[in-house]
Length: 119
Figure 1 (cartoon, rainbow, N blue to C red):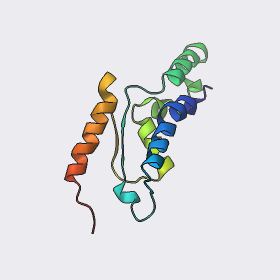
Figure 2 (cartoon, rainbow, N blue to C red):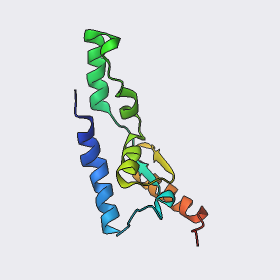
Figure 3 (cartoon, helix red, strand yellow):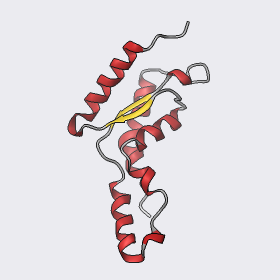
């Protein structure tokens, strides 16, 4: 089976983790409910989709991986990132083709204006 996490880790999760480190953001039990993930992503899981489609055609539906659906959705990277970081706040992916990343930044900014920090 295709290593489904290779591109996910290299292209999405590691740069996000580096950004968290550079921002010196610490996520712990005191703030994890207030930290969310909004990730710009157009498509995910094409390698596993292609592989599983071939498996379906060659060997039938019983051989298709149960991991196909959750790994091919565009929000799979944001889910994995929140699990990796321990972020328990809002979590979603913005998918708008080439402007996904910029739109995700805009969405995060808009949401930050609506959030009232705890005292």
